[in-house]
Image (cartoon, rainbow, N blue to C red; front, side, top):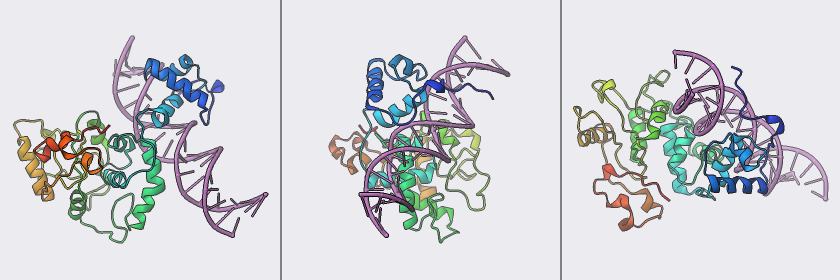
Length: 275
DNA sequence: AACCACGCCAACCGCACACCG
DNA sequence: CCGGTGTGCGGTTGGCGTGGT
C-alpha cells in the first residue's frame, strides 16, 4: 500500500542497545513521559526509530518490570490464560504485573511448551495428546476446577471478544472464531436466549483458586447480575466458590491487608493490579 | 583449546487498528 | 468517508552464552 516506513532507516542504529542509548531514553522519558514515539528519538538524541525506542522501553527499561525467573504460580497462570486466550500475549501479560508480552511469549515458546508436552498436553489445544476426543464439558470443567476467575471489562473487552477461544465445541472446530463467546468458548443458545442482547463484562480478574466464571449483563431487563453469576457458575461449571486470592497466595499480602480478601462475595473478587 | 549444537531472549518486521483532520 | 499517521501486537530472526564433544 506504499506506506511510509516508520523512520528513515538509513541513518538509524539497529541491533543491541548500548548503555548510553538506554540512558538517553530513560532520561528523556523521565523528563517528558511516554508518548509520541515517532518524534521521541530525535528529541532524545537517539539514532533509533520510534518503534525501537518503544520496544526497548516497554520490554526492558520500564521501572515496573519484574526481573528474574517465573514462579510456579506464574507458570500455571500463563498456562490457564493461554488455554482461554490463545496467543494473546499482551492480554496475558496484562494479568502478570511486571511481565511483558514479549517475555511471556518467549517463556512460553522456550519453557512452557516443553512443560506441557512433558505432561502429555498439546500446548496449542491444551488437550491431552493421546485423547483426541475429550468432551468439551470435561475440558471446561478441568479449566474451571483448576481455578481461574475471569472477569473482563475495560480496554481488554474489545480485544478479548476478538480473541479466538482455544476450547471449542466438539464438531464445531473450524468456524466458530467469530462468535462473541467468552474466552472459554461457552456461549450457547441455552445460555443466551438472544445472543445479541448480551454484552459481556470483560474486565479480566484472575484469582488462582477454584472460583466460578462470572459474567454480567449490562442489560438490566435480563437476568440480574447475581442470577447470571449463579447460572454461569452452576449450570455451566457446577459453580464452586472456594476462592483463594492471588495476592495472598503468592505472598504479596496477608488476608487482612488484602483488599480482595475483604470483599465478602467471592464472585465479585477482582484482581487488584498487584504492585 | 577449539569447535559445534542448541537454547534463550532482545530486537526486528510486517500487519492491523485507532485516531484525526 | 477517506487517507495519513502513530501505536500496538504477534511472529520471526539473529546474536550471544553455555554445555557437550
